[in-house]
Image (cartoon, rainbow, N blue to C red):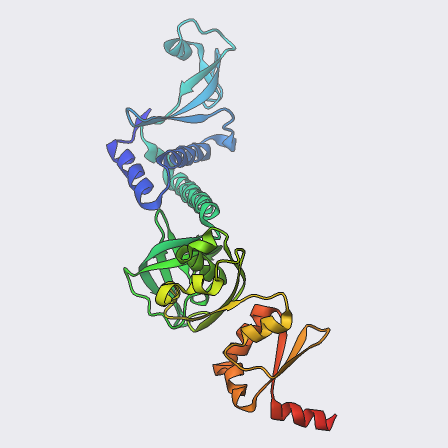
Amino acid sequence: MYSLGPAFMTAAETIEKERNIPREAFVQAICDAILAAYKKKVPGHNIDGVKTVFQEESCQIGIFAPLTVIETVTNEYTEISLEEAKAVLEDVQLGEILEVDVTPEDFAEYGRIAAQAARQIMRQRLGEEEKKLMRQEFEVRKNQMVVGQVSRIEERQDGARDIIVDIGRIEALMPPREQISTQEYKRGQRIRVYVSDFEEYNRRLMIVVSQAHEELLSELFRLEVPEIEEGIVEIISKARIPGRRSKIAVKSNNRDVDPIGACIGARGARIQNISSELSNEKIDVIPWSEDPIEFISYALSPTQIAQIALYDDNRALVVVPDDQLSLAIGKGGQNVKLASKLTGWKLDIRSEKEFANSQKEV
C-alpha cells in the first residue's frame, strides 16, 4: 500500500468544511481516480475485480487485484506464480484466485496521462457531490423564507449585479430579476429571501433566492401576523410590483377578528415591519369579497367608483369621477395593474366624461 500522509486527511477535512462535501465522498473520489489511473496502465484496460482500499488509521491506499495462481505467468496483471502466491498465502493451490496488493511503489510511474485522468475524475466526483448536496439543501428549503447575509456582489458583463447570499451551509444566488430594484444591497447586510429555484451559474448549480417573489410577501405576513399563522386570517390573493407597491386581499375565519386590523397591527407596527423588509414597499391590505363588483371596488381603493359593469370575457368596465381617473390608474398604471391581478379581472378604467362620450357615440 502507499502512504498518502497526514496532509491527505487534512485536505479532506478542509474540503468538508469549506465546500460542505463529506470527507468520505472526497476519499471515494480519490480511490476512483487512482483506479482509473491504474486502468490506463493495464493493457486492454481490463480491470475486472480490481479495487482500491483506503485505511484511515494509517492514511494508506492500495490497489488490490484478483490474480489466478499458475505455474508460468504470461500476464502479470491477471496471473501470479505459485511461488509468489505462497509468499502471500502458504497453503494456496494452483488455479485458485488470490487477491493481491498490486500498488506500485511510486504513483508517478502512471505518467502524465494517468494523472490527468485521475484529476478529471476527481473534479467530476467532487462536482457531483456539490450538486447532490445543493439539491438536498434545495429540497429542504424550497418555497420557504430564510434569513441570509450578503456575502459578495458580482458584476455581470451586461452591467447588472448578482448578489451572492450566505444562507447557512451554502451560498445562494439572487440574480437581477429576483432583486428589489429600489434596494441598495451591501456586503454583510442581513436580508430575508424566498428560496425559489435551481439555476446554473458560472458552470455551477446554485440555489436561487428572491426578494421579488410574491410568496415572500405572504411569508412576511405569516411571520408578523399570528392570526395568519394560526389560520384565523387567510390570504386569498396578492399582487406585487417589488419595492414599489403591493396589494393583498385577506378574509377572517372568525367574525370577531378584523382581518385588516390584524394585518396592520397596533399603530401600523406590523405592516411597517413588513414594508421595511421590502425596501419600504407600499402595501395595501384590502378585504376579500365573493362579490366581484365589491371586490373590484375594494381593490381600487381609495378611488371612488361611479359604476362597474362585468362582461363574459372576464373584463370589467369601471367608471370613476373625472377627478379620480389618475388615482384609479395610479403612477405608471401601478394601481390598476395590481388591482387587475389581485381580482383576476381585466379592468378598463374610464372617467365619467369618457364613458358619457362613448355612450353618445353608440
